[in-house]
Length: 209
Ligand SMILES: [Zn+2]
Image 1 (tube, rainbow, N blue to C red):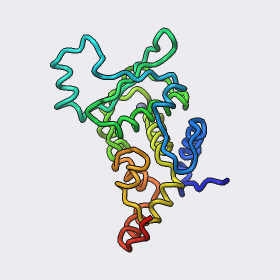
Image 2: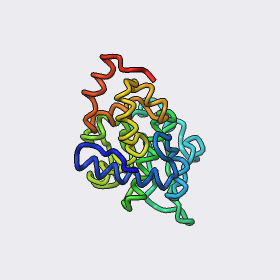
Image 3: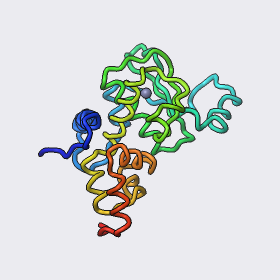
Image 4: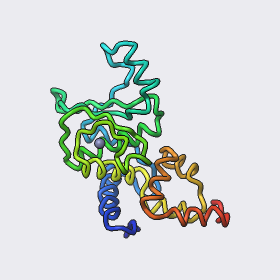
């Protein structure tokens, strides 16, 4: 079956990569993708933040409190002896945002990007596109953009998103379906030029299925 692709060439390319990842993960159609399952194949070892030793309570409190907005997660640049890479996710961001962060790390691996240091980046999709709030990154700008965009597309594929939008589903409902944040769904709607459709469908009260 031919998949419906986004309107711009750039998004089309991202979408094809994302569909490849979904294929690899064995999910089809509207099925939500579990990045934690995919992380295994990417040899990413996701470690619970609370299990990190030698972190002062001061640092811990800062990272989860005042500084919680300034990092979403990171992958260690050095591989573990068994060839796996360590990934830490910010527990203050909640499961949904963690899934997008992990998906970005998975995309980096599948795209063959090589990191050179620990990344600490802002995980807010609305600021990520301009990368204005990125504090530090371990890949070049193009690689960052591609990994984030492809990860997001793998989580919320265009064809499903478009259909949900046409049906008048709210961003909240779509987010719940794909187990991602509402912000991620809004980001996907905007970059794929579906915002006008979304507004129209919600205004006319399209049939609510
Ligand atoms: Zn990245």
